[in-house]
Image (cartoon, rainbow, N blue to C red):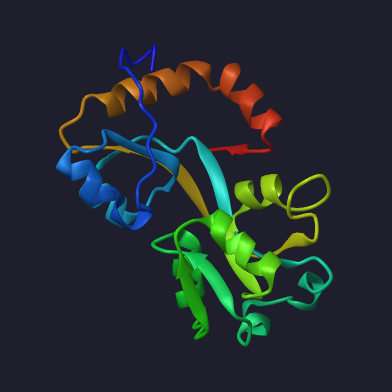
Length: 188
């Protein structure tokens, strides 16, 4: 915010409506793990990729090793975040038993409570939220469905995209590299 000379207010939105919110002016950018897609490029001004991500299966740790391919998971009940890349992967895999929920965190709660068998979420979220020392110690990540890159979306007419690209390039080998190491991210 300091480098872009803007004031920041963080707000949660319905992820499925991110481009509607952006176009309406109720938000100025979309940054929370925003996958760079053809749709994003058509609806917004999208920054250069800054980190790589993958969509991964998450389920009970004692069962995740049984799923070696996407086809192996076809009979599972999935909870996925509405409008997310994970939801897209579940639909692309042809899964029929899908419940869409508001957030990836809600999807994890569905698995923990037993109302769903699995979810497909960002590997960054899976690394942070599952396994030893987390609230979801009994959950683990499994197979990878797809890989992607994250960017930041601004309105089509925004001059902030170029400013952000320049700023990110200037810190790629310093601060950004340190942040990636701290949070187990892979830079793009």
